[in-house]
Image (cartoon, rainbow, N blue to C red; front, side, top):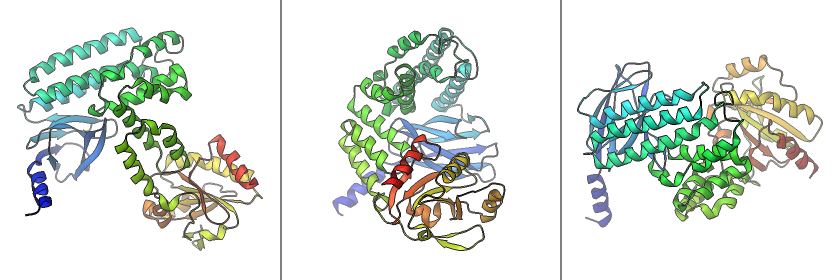
Length: 437
């Protein structure tokens, strides 16, 4: 037996599945399981609901937090050990544990409910911050007291203490995100908020180990933006953190806003590369390599598209012009918000050497056509790419979300693979600069 085979067998031996049996008393079609890693929850597994039941086998090497996701707002924490069997009831708005002896998960489900009740104390209501602090402190004391009954689970016990304290930190920062009428001291007492900001210390938390770690960092940045200004908030967050590993984690998390590797992503990497760990930089290099074929200067294949009259047209038809492409879909709200801005730019550049081309990634051409019949396209060339993100043009540009804007030069080469949106005030000036170059 080779060394590699021995290592593989050892890895298998150290992995043992936990079973999650779900009784689904709702209209959910599938049960989605998220896993905590690096300060955030990530998709891990899902299974279809059949006859109001779903079952998941979760391979585990060590214990840790998971989340049952009912929707974006409801993600109920559970805790799994290798070999566990957990029985749950999933309703439209909550999760129940069906076994009384499952001490940890009965505690966590109750903990989640009380946490959400506290959150709603300052959602959509006018509250006084000092009164809220009293409620936050009581929540912390109650949760720590209840947790004492679970000291015989030492790893969970310590992890949950840290989670409770992190939620307390989170809730102390959240009010600054509320609109002015909600927190009656928000705008009137900036000095107070500056003091509160200086009292927040993220260094008492290991962000990677907390299920809400990245949320804490994001809230701190938002708090810094309110107190210091948007141009200083991200740097203030990084400078506040003392651990290089946490700084690297925050930089890498922020990079998620760049759906593709483009010039703006590279500018961000260049600015903050001193904070990025060697291991994270290696992952970045692998991510960048995926976009090698759509970097500026690369030629674009000649894609076949359809007009509203169902006639075939090639993308090369527009060569000789700069081409500003809008990849969109009728089901996408943000896409439709950009439509009047895209049309407005097309009207402003009418007669210039630039084509405005909107390519639908809808699956159904009838839905696309019906939508267009209700709208005036003006100077915009409306084309159908079809097949959603599986259409050839979407796959080439590695589209994972819409709207997505692309700029090509008159030779059909990529200038920007993730161009700024039409509603962005800088877009018009950028287009004009290219036309005059």
